[in-house]
View 1 (cartoon, rainbow, N blue to C red):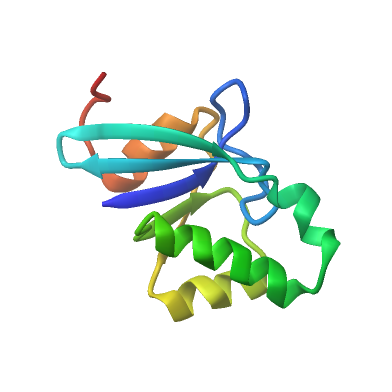
View 2: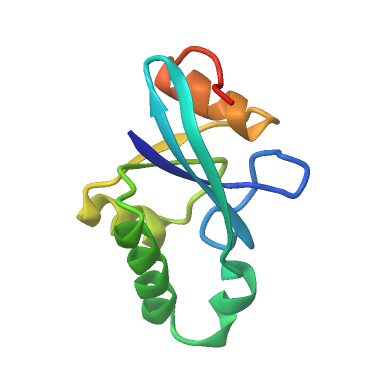
Length: 114
């Protein structure tokens, strides 16, 4: 399963997914986390730089490009929730401090692989 989540520089789950400055794209299986790649997306800064539809299109393009199947987040606004639903991307809310812990709990996976 390919999962996307907001991350902070210290490895915590970011508080606002649609306005994240950095996200991780994670490949998780029943054995645990197989790969973890982080991207500086700047969505927090870019969010107010144009209409909401433009921001959603930017996020949607990233998700499609990375073949994301699920999002793990602390908070996602109603508009973004609607967009994810239309794309068929599952949304899982979490409140774990460490981003990797949130992924492992949501997907019931084993340990993280190096």
